[in-house]
Image (cartoon, rainbow, N blue to C red; front, top):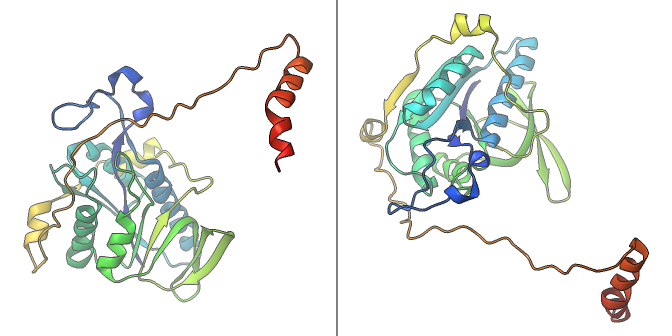
Length: 273
């Protein structure tokens, strides 16, 4: 089994003060001073892949693990960390393009890598990532590959016959099914999936292994691969005002406030039910 885990490096927007959300002429917000992290859903995907490999080792069916990201050299440090965590390959598709709102381009690059280089039969990635948060990349990639896609996955376990036992959330509860690759799995809210930290021994043994860098244009230009989709054009960006109006109920004691709440607001509403 050859597993590809896709992840995205994003700025930690929780560290940005509200006054710094200023959009420039290129429709960007300056985040260069903010620490870069692995997108949380993708972090879960990476850890779940490692947990799967741990369980598969017990069954003497160790999978090959490849970590893949699209972006510039800022991702190299994270790729080296993943090498220290026993990923067999750490690959970066080098792209300088603005891919925040272009899931079809990201999916095309991932599909091209699988078809030409990786030959993977299981793809794991987070269900969505900032800043775009479109939640479309796994589904578009599955459409391009012609593979089934399972979303909101919370755990993956090895099963007999080179199959996977996948647990995912559905509308009315939890679904657990055994599937046969190839497939694409989109990780949702998975418990106990914080990415583990490599030991100093792991870093010395594996962390210095090279990161593979592939030029996006070269990847798409070889082997008869169609050109990258043009995507949508970003015309504007603004913050969503999530404030809601409210009423402060006056009163000296909790009892007075409760009576005011009932007689002023709830009594009439309850009478109309």
